[in-house]
Image (cartoon, rainbow, N blue to C red; front, top):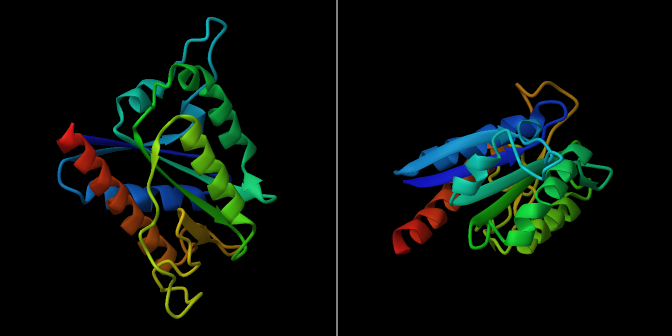
Amino acid sequence: MTKIAIVYHSGYGHTKVVAECVAAGAKGVAGSEVSIIAVGELPPPDKDRKLGGRWDELAKADAIIFGAPTYMGSLSAEFKKFMESSAGLWFTQAWKDKVAGGFTNSGSMSGDKLNALFQLAIFAGQHSMIWVSTGMVGGQPAGAPDALNRISSQLGVMTQSDQASPEVTPPKGDRATAEAYGKRVAEIASRFVKGS
């Protein structure tokens, strides 16, 4: 059994939709057990530096996929709180050699989402995790709503949401990109589990 955890923050519901698509892709890989965890379920350490909530699920995960919206060219503050709350785990290198990946969403096509992905990849690197790229070339035609990887990101998944309900945006191509990425991360994590 390969355990995949998806940790996300979503301000308006769009990033949650992306997290669910990533989870659907990971669940499609035989032998995968997938959990979706909102950062609100991962409270900061208590006065004794103990972690409560669902932190134990991350300890047991073989892969952790991180996702957050890009606000003002950076990850959301709620997601950054989660990152900082993991400092004790960083100190002990508790997540060392776990597989990692990431995704981000914003209202514009760019919105400096690459910076957000850099932040996620560096965060994974701080924890000595093994980062997984998208494994996809850019969408054709570029920017078409139904194109796979329409924003042409290789580091992690970038999606874009219009000023509309999460029921209709991000578009079909972005959702398919997120699903394909979840599958890729789960397949790679499975190889590590089988080889261990």
